[in-house]
Image (cartoon, rainbow, N blue to C red):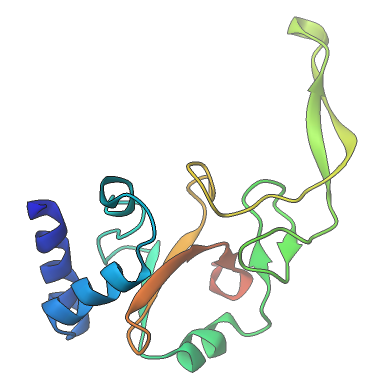
Length: 146
């Protein structure tokens, strides 16, 4: 439990919000076992390129510009930040050893950001101060470096 309190303090320091308000917000959103909910993947440290803080939802939406998001699985552009709707077909490996090659399958990508491998390390965690909560999403195309 000390980790949870330390992370709430970290969020308070980085956002200017109250520690108690941050913790209460997390508890209000929590709907499963606390040991799984309070892990680094759900409340990552604020800093670096993969965690962004916005004052409100409008500020986030303005930064995402066209509401286009990069799917980490197929590298296509999705209009949905959580589930790939790019329409891009998945690539699969056919054959073994020296005969193995990457080919397009009939399966259209439907990757979701939820779960253990959700963003494949290519997504972002967005924390909105006015909502006092954050979520992991596909990275907005507008944030990609040229």
